[in-house]
Image 1 (cartoon, rainbow, N blue to C red):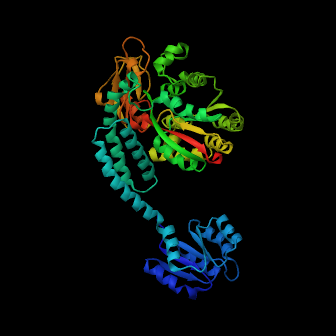
Image 2 (tube, helix red, strand yellow):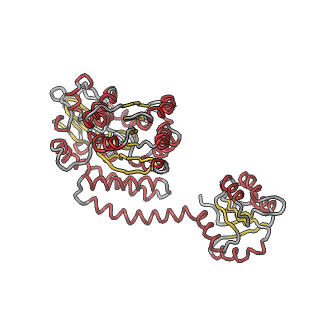
Length: 522
């Protein structure tokens, strides 16, 4: 709710403020004057003010001494100190008690108006500018949607829409948010068709133009970093979407210079497939051929039990020599505390410190089973907010700070994103079908509505190992989740509104990868 356009100016020389008062009133503000601190507090107790201009040198007691009583009466009212004192101690004290601004007399009316406008109208002005910019850009985005897009154009389009999603989510422009959400949904069918047409070709002809995939993350991004530095931190945040990444960037860029790139997750966009491919540099079919004991006909996360070994093997092949690897996967807060204590020792050694953080993946999975988690992460905006809150005091952020302090560069990425699923899609399958809601392996699989999913009969052509005779893969498109006819209502009630992954959408496939160079090392 906007604060009133009424200003309380506290100054023992009120007769000298007439020009200021007139100028502010000409610009739509009402100004009330108080010559004494007690008078100001009495007025504040009777009515709210949008802003208080407070002189430091008042009769009786200093203006700064009034601030605690002002805060106790109206904790949210902005206070601007106006003083003749140029002493740094006074300025430091004002900053220390978090005053909104600090002006040194003499001040002219335009200076005061600028501060008042920024504090009382700044949010509204910024929101109006955001709305204008979005409306202009939205028309251009819609025009681009109608064109034939290659993987680079898809990346640019999706990254920009996710950036707008994060920006609009922090505003009150619900109408614009709804328009953007509708636009994002309209991209899903086109993107599914694009992947259906191009993905097998990317695998069959890797030397031709294709996006970086999960299998390329280490070779294209990690190895060049390792060749230039003795010690490198490699971070994989499980299930991090582009819009969540946008909210983490401001804190990270306070510590690091950042170079952003993007890559496409392999399919299915689920941890057992995508993260194994990152650490091995291999498609699942190649992992099974090389390490048959590590890959069964399952699709659970126990398939990720050998990530450290896969990373060591890949780096040795790429670099031509053994590379020391220190690998940890974190799933609990206690593990995070222990990691923070070990990180300084890791970063003092040569080689790669590889860290996997599972919090966001656990959050997206757990909200379907936990009513409290569901409420605090009820939609994309809330999920972003929870992610940002977690990050502020996470073991991840503390590890990044330690890397910055020691001058160790970081490669930070994710293995897949997620999609907010609202629409059930009925599928028919035998009892052997896997239980996943966004992708399924099984015999005689089919979707009631073919447009809701991509069917894969030739698993090797999609980089996946052959299974039993007749087993095929079904991957959900758009915001669909799979339900069986016999459990239709149960699955709808339980999983509608869940954040899921494993399917074919830009939100799940197009992912950030960031090279972080410590500012301390410059």
